[in-house]
Structures are given as C-alpha cells and as structure tokens.
Length: 270
Image (cartoon, rainbow, N blue to C red):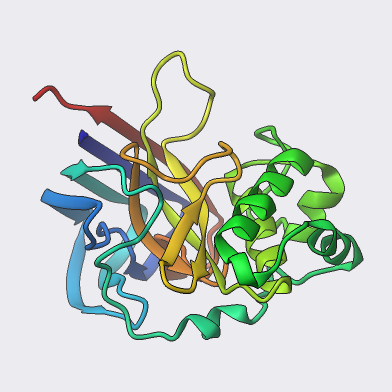
C-alpha cells in the first residue's frame, strides 16, 4: 500500500518560552514491511541537532528552538510503501535483548486484576504464538474501544478496571499481561490508515509487540482485534507510551502549554 502521511503538532504557550529542546522519534522503522521514499521533518524556528539509532533500532534526532516564542509547530510530511507481514517484524535491526522487555514500567505495573486476567488465559510458552493471540483477544474482550474516557496518564490497571479506553490502553494492558506470562512485550507507536466507513480511530495509533521464540517480534493490535498489516506504519517502540513517545521535550519558561495534534494518512493511487 502506498501511503501519504501528514502529521502536525502545535505547542502554544500563554507566555513566551525562552527555549525548547526536543527529542523526536518520528522516522519510520526500517524493516521488510515498509520502505520510506520521502520523509521530511520540520520544526518552526528549530535547529536540527545530531541523530542516532538507538538500541531498539529507532531513529532519534534532537531539535532546539531558541525563544522567545509563543508557539512551536512540528511538521512531518512523507510517502511510504507498506506490505502485510502478518504482524512479523522481519528484517528489523536492533541490539537490545528481548528479555529486557520482561520488566515492568510505570504504565504497565500489574495489579491483582491484571494478574488474574493473565492467569486465566489458556496456553503456555511452549506454544507462545497461540498464547499471544489468546492474550490479545482477552484484552480486546475486556476493554471496549471508547475515546475520551482515559488520558495520557491512564495505566493498564486503571483501563482494565474501567473496561474502556483507546489504543494506548489496549497496548498497555496487553503488554502487562504478556509479561506476566513470561513473554517479552513492548509498546509500539505509529500510524494507521482506516477507510471512511471503518471504525473511528485516530490516524496516530499504538499497538503491542510480543516476542515469540523462532519468529521474533510480532505485532498485536488489541484495539482492532488484529495483527498489523499494510495499513500500519511503525515509528518506534518502548516499555510503555512514555518510553515510546514520538515527541519528548523540555520547555524553559513559566507559561502554560496547550497542544493540538492533526494526523492524516491517505492511500495514494498507483
């Protein structure tokens, strides 16, 4: 699938800030399932700093904005080809051992309910792929997709207790219970192309990856009850949403900050 992506994030401040330092994880992953043809990142008034590929295989680059400024716009425009890999992250180069993703993180700390859910799923690590599918289905069944009921600070335990949430919540919950069943798991950020008559999802999307011995990392989108296919564009991963955030930064100033995000993913004609 040929996709065109436009992503704009605008930060507005009620008082001008002195400067802003950002770390951007906004470049598509390099693996067999996607090939980037054009990708342009712009930060209004920004100075591009050094970039590097981290141990998880994600490309990260730094930007600095010198003030005083009362707003900063981060803009991405790109074209990318994707193909269905049945969720398998084949050809992705990284150095971090999968077992590192067995550890908990602030958003995925398990409580009694998450432990009970993980223990209730039939299967074993002897057939890890089957177990992973059952874990994803369990999260899909326990957390209904409903925008606006959770926030960026919601944890996996809170989303499960509420029984509602968005893709971030499904991904946190699936990551948490997979780790409880001794399967390395991580949070993935990216984009999703959906048709006009499809379910209402933001184009900015998130899902989980579970490591299966012999196959490697496999994506599971519990919010949509499927594995990522050609509609998905992968950006990066981490222990949870905060760790995998596409944009992280520090603003120096005393003003309050407002955030507006607009993401558009379109299929291009051949």
